[in-house]
Structure formats: C-alpha cells, structure tokens
Image: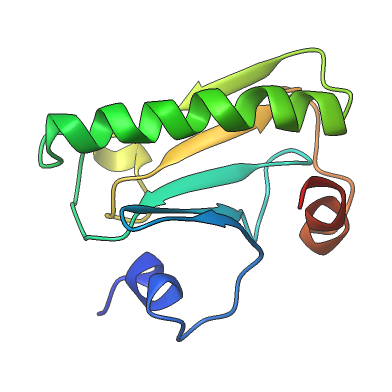
Length: 119
C-alpha cells in the first residue's frame, strides 16, 4: 500500500496546506484530536525518527518553533503539545510531528474552519 502522506505530498489527495518548502509540508490533520491539530511532514519518505537525517529533524523543529506561537495566538490556545509517535502508536509509517493546541480537549470544529483561521 502506498503511503498516505506521500500521496498528499504528491498532490494525489487534497489537504489544507498551511506551509510548504523544499523539505516539508505543514497541513491540518484530516481527523483532528483537537481543534488546530497540525502536522509537519517531510516531503521525502522516512518511516520513523530513527530513519530521518538529523539536519531534517532540526529543520522540522525550526518550522514547529515558527508555527507554535502562530497557532496559539490565532486559536487563543493556553497550551500546546508536540508529539512524535514511534512504534505501534505511529499509525502512518511516515515520520511526522503533531502540533496539538489545548491538548486534552476535543476537536469540535471542521479542519476547514480552523484552516481559515490559521492560513
């Protein structure tokens, strides 16, 4: 089975894209755990944290540092969790970072509505 994130990156599946550069894409999670659930995905496929080059991890963290204050301000979030799943908790085997504002609450809005606030 082909990777879902690779299909998104290749434009085969539509997404709400917040940012893109040569190395990564930042998108809204299609099935958010919380309002504003955002993903940072490398454009090149790496299965896990153990596979991804260190310089790309640094770049992903730099992008996260830019998006965290933006997401928190636009959504009036009091807190934000950063998650990278590994092993069985990693549902899609393509490394990605989750930005989860107000983690512990539930998603109440459609990702498209949140995208309109964050873009």
